[in-house]
Image 1 (cartoon, rainbow, N blue to C red):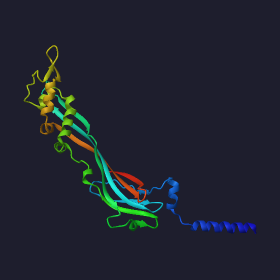
Image 2 (image 1 turned 180 degrees about the horizontal axis):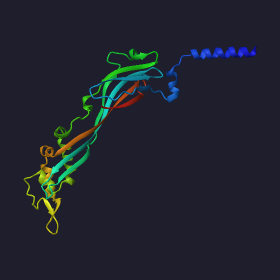
Image 3 (image 1 turned 30 degrees about the vertical axis):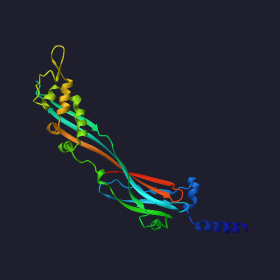
Image 4 (image 1 turned 45 degrees about the vertical axis):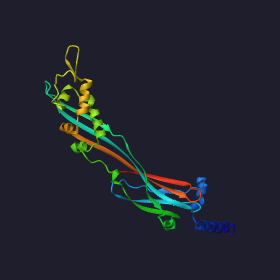
Length: 266
């Protein structure tokens, strides 16, 4: 009989435990060691600029005193250009020079920009409370800004739409590859025997190198029109990432918990 009683008591205890409410709010203070809100933003998929992403954020607090929840975005863009030139020359062998360079543009940082605030003016966070999750669940449609769009230009169009500062860097990247015959091919008006622009050795033979004046002529006079006359291919690899950050703030202590997720622009 004693064994039967023990089984009945154990069964009754299990039933009571199963019926007890599972309340994550009651545990949060013990888990974190301090009174801060819980805040979690769900990962979003990669997307092109102009697409709409539905952001999902879940927040709760021990004392249920979340005052506000905000959404913000920031971005990082890095472009790598691969440019190739074909330059026929009029040397004794009619050599055709294939020149190439890979240039990484300085990264472009888009500063943090807030785009949503909850509760909305005149509203209340209670309207976002989900009983099943025992938390505030906010769904927000976010249109990916066009300034994050990938660069899809190529060849002459890519060169023509470059800002002058970037084009200057491209011209400078090719400078070490420019020889006497290449400079004359770029600028046929130059005297190919000019000692102002071309270096000669002790025996009076042209080395193929440019003088400082010759290099300055190249850097100063190269423009997009001339450059495109010799362009074989120009492409760009655009690596753009966008980070979404949400922040939940408590009303009394102003304690803040943030959550960030990053996605790739397609």
